Amino acid sequence: MKHVGNPTLGIMTLYTHGQTFDKEELSYFRQLTAVGSQLGLDVFVFDPGDAHAERQLVKAHRYDLKKQVWQQEWLPFPDTVYDRCRAQRSPRFKEMRRFRSRFPKLHYLNHPLSSKWGNQLVLERNNAIHPYLPDTRKYQGLADLKVFVKRHPFVFLKPVDGSGGRGIVRITRAEAGNYKLEGRDTNRRIIAASNIRISAIPGRLTSWGLTNRYLIQQGIPIELTDGRVHDFRLLIQKNSQGNWQVTGCAGRIGGGKSVTSNLHGGGEAIPFDKLLAKRGLSADKIADIKRDMEHLAHLSAKELEKRFGGLCELALDLAIDPDSRIWLLEVNPKPSREIFRLSGDHETYQLALRRPLEYALWSAAHK
Image (spheres, rainbow, N blue to C red):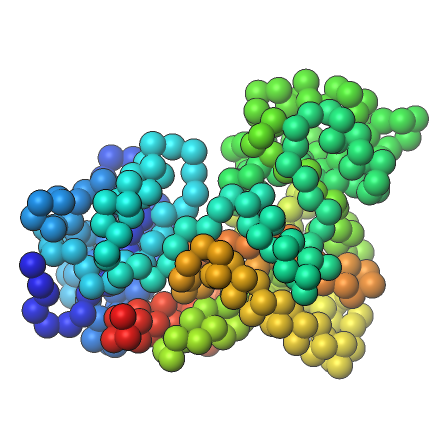
């Protein structure tokens, strides 16, 4: 069954409860619908579980721009699929994998990456990227933790498939052979700092299922003079000619007592140059750092794409230590772009909205 009229883009995402989607994502999808209309691209949203294989139809959620309401109807499979299914441990995520395996001939803008650990292993094999990566290991038991806390002044335990700062703890050497444990639980609530013996940490976090689900990572000193942590989110996307191009980069400053800078955890967005100037860096040094970060972004995007298949966008979480060394903390294939709006960079925010749609049009014409 073919579409008549404009080419179509189906945004594949996962229901959160019943037949509803994440509110923040819905806001993004409304904006994509509006921009798509300007570009001559019809946009709709669907859950991969709502596919009728025999009839080649999906139960589509379409946003009516005039009535400003969501409406549902059965539509032919889209010309292009934009995968926004974020990794999670649930049967719903398996629906996405099942959909892709059942319909491999559909035109997908982006392919799934691995877990944080899988991505780390891919990037480590590239000699040009390896120096930017913190020392990282998959947690197998207390022995691994002991090795890391001896090697580094502080380390992080982070879930291999987490997001938004959930379930991340920082472990720092303290007095009398103890270690300070602090962070956020799996519901993103701040854990009050406490001193603890290293041998007691696995027991303290026993309900988290650390083994095989967590990474241990070297901590990078990124505290500002007021004690708050900070890092940077860089967005690289395919443009309207199908080429990788850095869209923008902005800073994040974590909330008080937070060991992460995530915006969902109370963090604050700030322009890239402003944050580095706040650290006392000169304009020339800031320009050098930006150039190196963009080079790293291109290397990383191409390396991951070579391993996992075509991608349309990628966000890099980056840290810059007191010696101005750049560190790649992790990559995110399903990024938000709110950081640009919240930092006041509305031009970059609008560009970040348009690029997946422009690339979808280019990609459909060249498939």
